[in-house]
Amino acid sequence: MKKLELKYPHTPKEDVAEVLHGTRIEDPYRWLEDDKSPQTAEWLKQQHKVTESVLNLYPGRKAMFERLQELNNYPRQSVPIKIGDWYYFSRNEGLQNQYITYRKKKDGEEELFFDPNTLSPDGTTQAYTSGRSKDKRYATYNIAESGADNSEYWVMDTETKTFLKDKITNVRGFGTPWYKDGFFYSKSEGVQDYQAQDKNHRIFYHKLGEDESQDTLIWEDPENPLRYHSASVSDDEKYLFLMGFQGTGGTSIRFRKMDEPHAPWICLFEGYDYDAYIFDAYEEDCFYLMTNKNAKNFRLMKVNLLKPEEENWVEIIPQRDYLLRAADLVGGKLIITFIKDVYSHIEVFDPDGNLLYPIQMPYLGSAFLSYHEKEDEEAYFYFSSYVRPNESYHYEVALNKLTFYHRDPVKAEFADLVVNQVFYPSKDGTLIPMSLIH
Image (cartoon, rainbow, N blue to C red; front, side):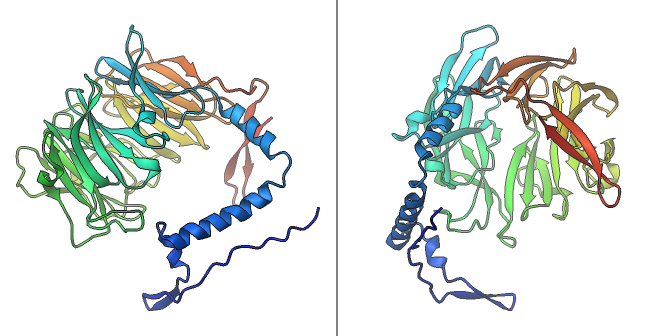
């Protein structure tokens, strides 16, 4: 094969440097961070020209593209989620830019609910739900143009399927938990484009019908400007939780009662050395706390907010020698997902942590429980594996019954493929799992 003589476009270097912790760091290509400058646009244009000159030499490029497009052109459907009397799901007919949301009642016909492809002429504006009102009438949508980091929150009336005038601008998504006739949201100070560093991440409360400028500041931490914050509301709307995040790991959790808006925050979990996730239990004032504090593979605790000190926490699911990945409360049961030897294993417990039975997986793979509410008697699982198309299963909690619901009709054959799991010892004798596909 003839060696290609490539002539790459010139990339100028600039004399840019910073001294960080006593060390001088050269950054001669910082000018490329300005994605809106004419110089960057021209540089990208020339780089693209070089790339195309190489790829166009391959005679099978067009055929490969057409074959890949053919294989990817099949309907995809999400796992249903139950919101009130409605079951919502998203579908992509094959090559649509965005999934379209549909809904149906249990024995009714499906109806089109929301098509994000209509938000822009080129169909590149993304939209996903970030919160719902307690009465299920309103839904908050995160709207991002062309996949931008910065987005907006819009509010939809699900009865009329229309957006209200309310808009929250320049946010970077952390959910919008609702309380009464409004919602909480997180927002950094002065972020206008992707180059800006998120600083002074604050939490606000927005009341429907009011302008964003009237929103109430709930929390800020100017002494730690690089920390991120999000809010959540207990199911009974009695408590407001404030979660703090630092870097790629570490969590803090504070709380206070909703009817005491000026009371000091009570610290439940602090230090940013460990991770924690909190969700409602059945008893009033009680919550489950999933954490890796003193448990590298995570464990599940129960916390009474009337006695929030750590010495009063009760261990519900102890740490095992494999990962506790998720904990969910549905239909009076705790559904716990473990990762054992790289695959999902799911077990059902009573609310006090007594093991009831496992959920039999249809095959070796990964399983995820879809959105649900703790009072629901049903839920949906999403399954994926190396050799099977994505599938969803309906789960009846009281019967511990898993029933096939949907499989994406991919244009390839997998029936003859088999996955076997084997183990081999490492140097110290640890057994390493390996999947053989044949």
